[in-house]
Image (cartoon, rainbow, N blue to C red; front, side, top):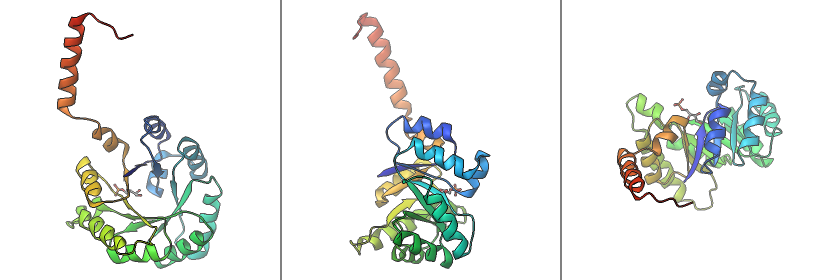
Length: 218
Ligand code: E4P
């Protein structure tokens, strides 16, 4: 499973990229707004920190402007993935950009039928939003399971299921069990994945016993 980090905070991205476990980055207009940075500048900086796909989202909602914005974003770096919303114009833009060889992430996916359309439009990634479905009392993870199952019926499909709107470690675990190809995870949730109280307790005991030996490995 590939791990993307869901943020436009370059300090977090730099820190997590140093672990060697980061496969890509996703941003959205809200995350760019939160960063307080210019989108073109911050995406360029992120692309210099991470080799894998970096999603940069268009801001327009009509086909002509989305296509222009997408082409401009794609020119920033080879690893830019243009993110478009799952609307009719968004999917037209996805089809056009994918045909030009640009990676596209179709975002704001809330149904399996929408995911079928994204795959038909040639998306590199489709982003079903798990947390936001849970927020309205639906089962977000069931959507991931359905899309994975449907895509597996068509082995020629190259669209990857990118579990998005991940809010806690249990979401990640369930997405991995369902076979999502990628999860985009907020930085704090990635850091939570490392933690277990028994790891901390076990390490403290090992260090205490080691100190008693008086030895040094180096
Ligand atoms: C995905 O690409 C989105 O940026 C993100 O996962 C949305 O998460 P949220 O629902 O927690 O805002």
